[in-house]
Image (tube, rainbow, N blue to C red):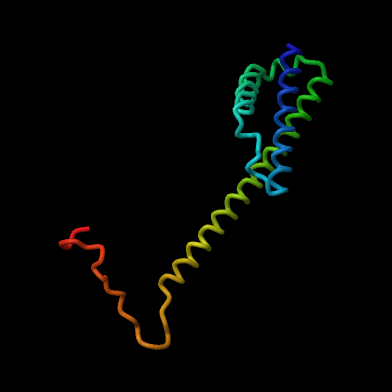
Length: 136
């Protein structure tokens, strides 16, 4: 019983460390190097999920007080780090989408810009050099 809780604490701390490393990468502008999307991290997440579902309230109440405190502290750090990670990813996503929309808007404005001075020029006529019997 205590061994299961200790494994859960170790997994929680490992996930927290990985998220913290990813946060540092995001803050330094190297989001492409994040480890969360790596296959070994996905496997660790699945293992954590399995271990967490195997620990119930009755088991934690029967555990020694120090072990219970460690589990609560590790879980709190994990949740806080996970929330910060989610906020940063949302910011990065919103910033990139905003940048893409700004570029698309600027390209659209330049493409459809009205010329206030002078007469509008007709579109260039095709020379027909590429046509043979009106078929490309």
